[in-house]
Image (spheres, rainbow, N blue to C red):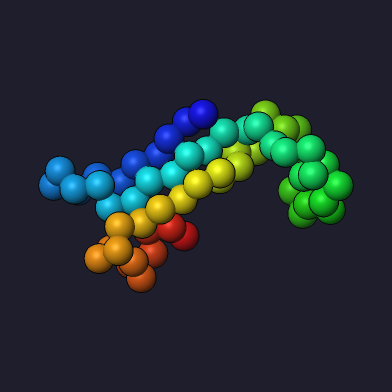
Length: 59
């Protein structure tokens, strides 16, 4: 797994866990993206610190 972290002045504002591993259920979905599995990253967890919500950090 890979992690993405938004840090500003020593404060973690947001973080995400992402990788290209998909669940077997994802294979049945008609995705709009036509790419191989290793070219697409999937967000498995996403968090934004409460006081920084609404700032677009998770967009």
